[in-house]
Image (tube, rainbow, N blue to C red; front, side, top):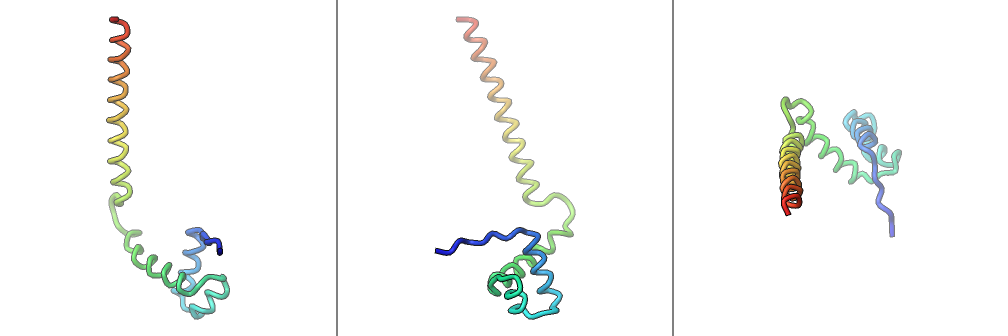
Length: 94
């Protein structure tokens, strides 16, 4: 059974930019880096889909989700602190 290769984002970007420059064919680039042409085509399409995100202003969707998650964690930590305080107070009263 073949092991899946995990390529870094930098490597993928390097390969895709080389494909976009069109200095060599897709098959030549694929053989040079020992990666399937189908995989490189998939990387290229994903790269082009997400290219517009580089120039968007304001927080990204991931950043918005991170802020919401941090607020939720802070609220839960406040609740834990409040409940801990109440338990300690009740222990003293008993």
